[in-house]
Image (cartoon, rainbow, N blue to C red; front, side, top):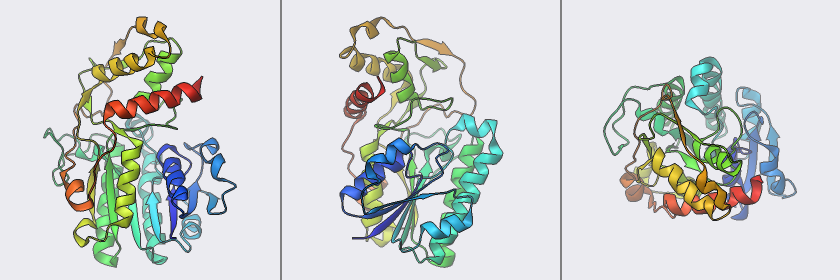
Length: 322
């Protein structure tokens, strides 16, 4: 079996990828500095002889060199996410998301890694109002975070053309699911709303709730990463793909769906009201992905709609957060 490096392997997406590929028999190096990831996410893997934890920061080039030794594939998930975080502290977001990304690219190039698959972002579409979002048409970035993720794509493209590297970018659209952290100032909306409902608190929606997103369950993301590793189609390499479901859901519809699911566990949640606040700076109003490119070139077929994903996610949160 092959060996994979998963950067950010103790994070939400990274730990799910780690678990999946270990179960498939791969050797997995996990690189994480635990700034946003959690040790609890990788505790079940520590005793696995095919698992290696490398505690370190992608901003340190020597650490990156160490992490890629003997590696066939890199799944680069390490980043500082969150648009609001990048607006508050653009310098650190740039250091991690751009300088750290470049460190990993250079280290992977020098180690002759077969393929470099990286987490891109739907934020790259910026102020483009076209729906659905098609990979080849983007707008101007609306946040420092969006800039950093677009720069990642530019660097990957240059490295593929200049050094002959195989790079594939996956533009994630609002990923959710098991192990996604509901705590902290920059918590994602789904785990945050679930936590608030479970605590008897009123979820707060930024704006009027009419902003829409293409919410994407973690299992669909895992599938896309595996397809990106395995594809031998020359047309499928050195490009970017929307990683989504192709469904558009408003925040109002999302919160009602969450309430409906959670009532099955606690009927008192039915009486919790929703509150509204101002729109959040840097947010894209509407997001809906075209997944035709991934379907055609990678053979992608989402296994989870929003509703099916929410059912699994809500049960996981109920079992693990109380």
